[in-house]
Image (cartoon, rainbow, N blue to C red):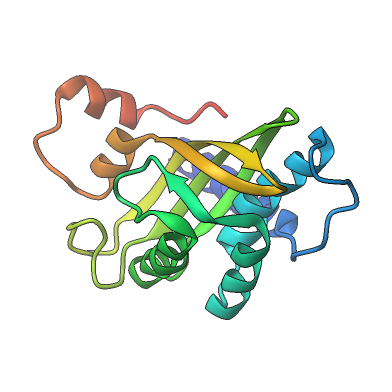
Length: 187
């Protein structure tokens, strides 16, 4: 019982801290082609854009930070900036309470990497073929982008899909994945 209460307190503080760090869109103070500018791009995408509930505002941000001919190496998301414009609402339809908590941003003059946590509750029309039953999801993601002409141009990502699928209730995953997904997070 004490462990369960401690876990609840830890989760509550985690989500409160994430909400406190959510930011609004601001223009960069650094010039394109710098580490500071690319850090701004990564932070803006992973912390600001993904936590913006208004589709109109998301489109405004995407138009500013993502190249029209965006190359997407995640086969679940369509190509181009328009692919992101069309895909992101699917997340919020499936998980209206979706939150994205940024942990790290690493940048060079031509690349940016972010590490973040995706949380939410499946209550909408389903996600990636998974029927909603109120499943709570919390899993980690790493994004890597190439930057071209001051915009995110090419993208790769790595999701903790085994943990996400197990939390979503998908059956039949190999036991080692089930065991690992049951372990506490170490962020």
